[in-house]
Image (cartoon, rainbow, N blue to C red; front, top):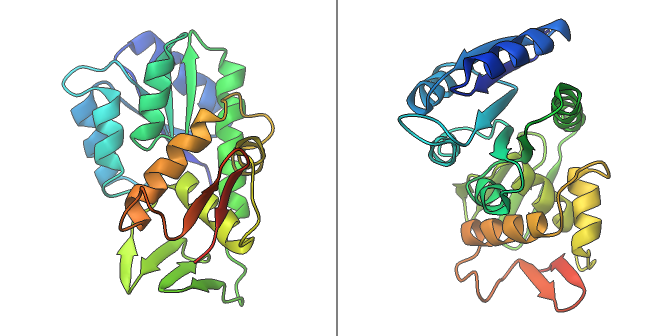
Length: 229
C-alpha cells in the first residue's frame, strides 16, 4: 500500500516538484497551500507523513504543527529557511519530528521521508505479544504506542514516545544527549544535541507534575538523561 504524504507550501512550483518526485517513488501525495487548508486535510485524512513549510498564509507552519499535534502524532518534517536555527528549534518545540532547510535537494527530502517511515514501520507490534511497560503509576503500551499515568492517557508525539520508551526499557541507564540523538533519530540525522533537550523538556511538561523536579525522567548533570521512579 502506498505511503500517503501531505505537502504543505504556498509556493506552487515547489509543491509541484515535490509531488512529482515523490509520486515517482510510488507515494500517494496530496497538497495544501495555506495553513488552514493543511489543518483541515490532517483532520479529514490519515497521512503517513507531512512536509510542512513554516512560512504560510492564513496560519504559519508552527501554528499548523501545534494544532495537528492536538489530535494526531503523524510525523511532521518542517521546511525552514536556510540557517534559521530559531525556526528549527521552534519547530521541534511545537512537535515537529525533523526539519529540512531550503533550498533543499529532493534526494535529501526523499531520504529523510524514507528514514522516518522505516523507523515507524519497525514499531509495528508483533501480533501475539503483549508489550506493556509499567513503572509506578505509569503504563507504556508499546503495541498501541499509548501512555497512561494514573489511568489518564497522555498524548505524545512519535519522537517523544520513542524517547520515553528507550529510557523506560533501560531504567537507570544514563544516556548522553549524543547517544539519544543517534539511537532515537538515527546516525544520519543532521540535527544536534539541542534536539534532545527540546524533546526532553516537552516530554517532562507532559508527564511530570512539576517539570523542574522530575519524577520520571532525570538529569545526570554533565552526563545525560535517565529514567527512574
